[in-house]
Image (cartoon, rainbow, N blue to C red; front, side):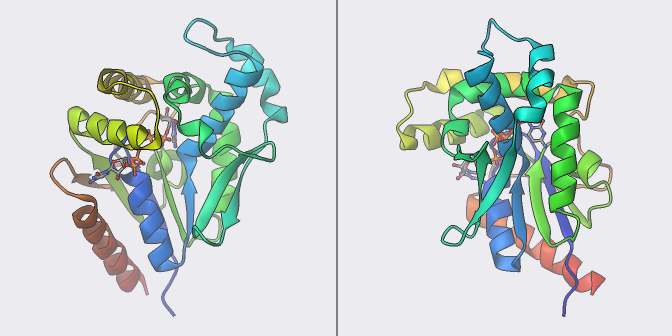
Length: 232
Ligand code: CDP
Ligand code: CDP
């Protein structure tokens, strides 16, 4: 039997991390964990209960509420992966709204928030056989991951992809709003003090500006299979 490995996929927003990670987990029979969804769920709580917005951000009150924020994934057989629940409510759709994307990087910069979520992520991946995507998976959550990938692509290409996705969902947004958000999050995520987004020394970088999803997936699947074979 082949050995189960841990696969960490980090990178910038809208580089296809979660799409590829889901496909890969399904193919390998691994668990998929969308760590970004966890930060988004905490942010949604902060927006609803503490009225966090562009003009209102009270870090201390978010920290005080952390014990009351329960975030978990519930596996869906049909989908083949878990959907995110915030205090027992499925928030999978709501957390993807641009309004949440506009607040999430501030919430994700709070060390106490990261500490709580990193602990849950490490727990979910403790038996290996996991594909996790995010910003700090290969650097902080699983520094010993067997395979680390770092995805990137041009800012414009990423914004166009995300815009198309949100439009198809029926969201009322403009390309300019999405581009601004992608740039702002890139900046905040790479410059924060705690666990900034950076490529781990041993991560394989994939620039997918010119790759479609299928080409990108083939590349990643080959890397994963080669690694599993080498380790078995
Ligand atoms: O899908 P997209 O790349 O737009 O974002 P995401 O993966 O859902 O992550 C949303 C935000 O959560 C990021 O912009 C980061 O601020 C934060 N995040 C993080 O700090 N660490 C992670 N491991 C994952 C996400
Ligand atoms: O998880 P992350 O934010 O990195 O990206 P995603 O949610 O998997 O992908 C964002 C959007 O870009 C989705 O609509 C993907 O289908 C699209 N995409 C693409 O068209 N071509 C790629 N090579 C990668 C992503």
